[in-house]
Every structure is written in C-alpha cells, then in structure tokens.
Amino acid sequence: MKDFREMKKRGERITALTAYDYPTARLLDESGIDIILVGDSLGMVVLGHEDTTKVTLEEMLHHTRAVARGVKQALLVADMPIHTYDTPEQAVKTAKQLVGAGAQAVKLEGGADHVKQIEAITGAGIPFMAHIGMLPQSVREEGGYKMKGMTQSEAETLVADARAIEKAGAFSVVLEIVIADIAKQITSAIGIPTIGIGSGEHCDGQILVTHDLIGLFPWFTPKFVSPEARVADEIRRATRAFIDRTRNGSALSNIRS
Ligand code: KIV
Image 1: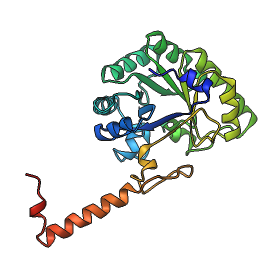
Image 2 (image 1 turned 30 degrees about the horizontal axis):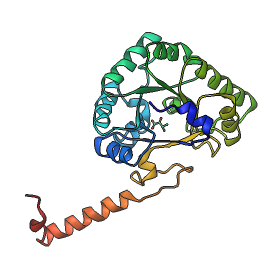
Image 3 (image 1 turned 120 degrees about the vertical axis):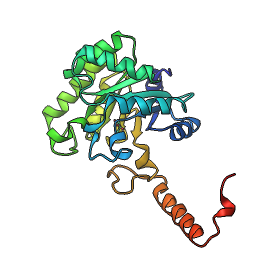
Image 4 (image 1 turned 90 degrees about the vertical axis):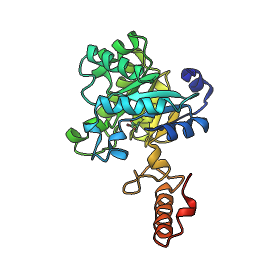
C-alpha cells in the first residue's frame, strides 16, 4: 500500500476513481490511478436504482471480485453497503468479507458517530477509508444531495468528525460536496489525506464516479463534474452502425470467428 500520509506531506495529489467490473478496473489500473473504489454508486450507475440504498453486500462482493481480477498496482477499496455496519461486530464481519473478495481496504459513511465501527475495523488490521460530508446512503432522510458545511455548526461537526476518524485509524477521508473553504480547513486540520468529490481544489486528492468522468451515464451529470469523454455517444454510434450494417446485410463479414 502506498504511503498516502507521505503523499499528503509531499503535496502529491492522490487520484481515485470508481470501477465495478474487470475491464474498467484494468484500464484505470494500467493508466496509473492510485486508488480504485468499488463504490456503492454501483446501485445507481450500473444497477439502475434511484440511489445507493438498495445495494446489497452480495452485489458488492460480486463486483469487488471482478474488479480485483483487473487491479495490479492501485489500492482497491470497497464500499460497505447500508446496514452492513450497524454494530462494530457487523462492521468487522462485513469488512472481512469484502477483503475475502479482493478488497485491500474498506469504506463506510459516517464520522464521530461511527468511531466504534472504525476502531473495530482498523483494530482487525483492515485499512479503512472514511467518508463524511454528504452521505448518499442517507439521501432519503436528507431529502436530496445537499452541500455540507453551510453553517458554522455543520462546519465544526465536519472538522470534529475528521479528527475523530483520524484518531480511530483511518488512512484517508472522502469529503463529499463540502463547501470548498471548509474542505480546506479540514485538510489542514488532519494528517491523513482528504479525497474530495465536489469539495473544491484544496483537498489532498480527488475522486469521481468513472461513469461521470467518461460520460457513460448521460442522463445525469453532477454539476461539479467536467466529463473528459463521451462514451455514451460512442456506444450509441457503434450500436447504430451495427444495426445499419446488419439490416443492410454487410455484417456477416465482420463476425468474429
Ligand atoms: O459510491 C461511491 O462511488 C462513492 C464515491 C462517490 C466517493 O462513495
């Protein structure tokens, strides 16, 4: 495992993207990404659910196994789905299952309120990545994806969460849609790297859902994402070309033998 604290000290930015299958994981890995996350965003961008709250541990294990086959150099982190870490005992059991599927580290959503779970996981020797700010698994209770750190008390809670997480042994923390100034404050308040998503430029690293980065989920793109490719358009173009050449009888010569 790379020393992410040392990277933070050196001011070396950490790069992270999600993957849910073998070819994507292998392509990201071969491109030199530092961290690959099997995110529970799986539920939305791969399985077609409205949010991440329907994702099961079985699904996460299945996709983690596929991703693990494609990863050689990156750190492979797997998300713990909702209600698989309600107690410290359950958290350790889930984390061990994900490690058994090929993950090298695990992530769950929550701060000081989950310190017992985090301590249990790190105490079991499993590297742990935290996730604070907007917590997608709580989107239903929250009534939407809302920016965090808007009020003084929210900002103070976020800083306290980050400190508690560091103390509990996390090696990094994802900050999801946190006001950029607060993300900057958190970044300087702790020794472990902050990995931002929609949280401005002052984090120690950045993470994105790969489907957003490459334009593979064209029906919705978060405001903070600037896609680098239009893969959905390419799929549509290739599909139409195949339909055309099949319908006009020119496809047979292209069939794989
Ligand atoms: O599930 C996920 O993809 C995530 C990232 C957006 C951080 O948690």
